[in-house]
Image 1 (cartoon, helix red, strand yellow):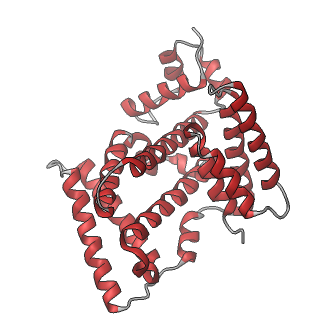
Image 2 (spheres, one colour):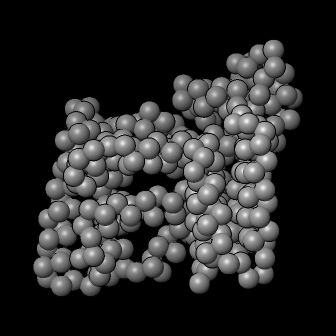
Image 3 (cartoon, helix red, strand yellow):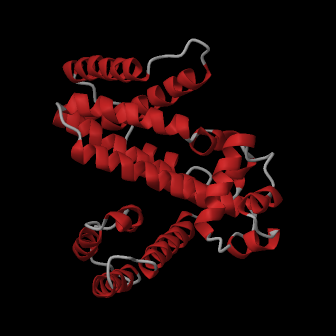
Length: 296
């Protein structure tokens, strides 16, 4: 039987969910795939690297699903916002062994995982920011970062309550409760002329917490995302002509990224073209965000 890298990741995710990361061994993952232990190490040098791959894929799948929901769900902005919270909770509960449990694991000290975690944090905060602006508009800009951190804290705390409470909270009721509290907070802060306490620097410190050398780490993450994008095209099933076209665009993107003075509009245009393909959207979106960070 031919076992792929994806098969190993699926087995790992299943066993992490059933037994927990610490209690799962590489040997058990190999047995679940019906392969030798050494075959796992051909793809993943360590169990930490395997968890990193599962974590990254899980995060990417979440954002893909959230984006699809945003594009297709009907209703008012607040109804769609509440729908996003419901989707988030359902997904995080289903994959709590990856999306939640890692917080208490020693993996958080692993350099590769820390990079992925910080990148996922940044993307999540930008997602929160876009939704809060869409729902509440320009009036929240003076205290936007305070609102983002408060919203994040509410999401996190009530997720823990939903997971841990013996008397289960309704996910839908919790989502609307959070939206209701944000309504009240926005009304009060905008009415009082609040300027907020936090700014962009709070975001930067939060995202890069634990990073001793962010410029070097940024370069590593960028290269990893670009390699992931190129690898997806190697197994592209949308036709040879289309694959060649996309590979040429990716090559142009790589050349521009590595340029001493990359052009922001060109990077945005190349990424926008690639994002038309659903299979490429996740790594392209991640790559675009991290590359454009700090560019004028």
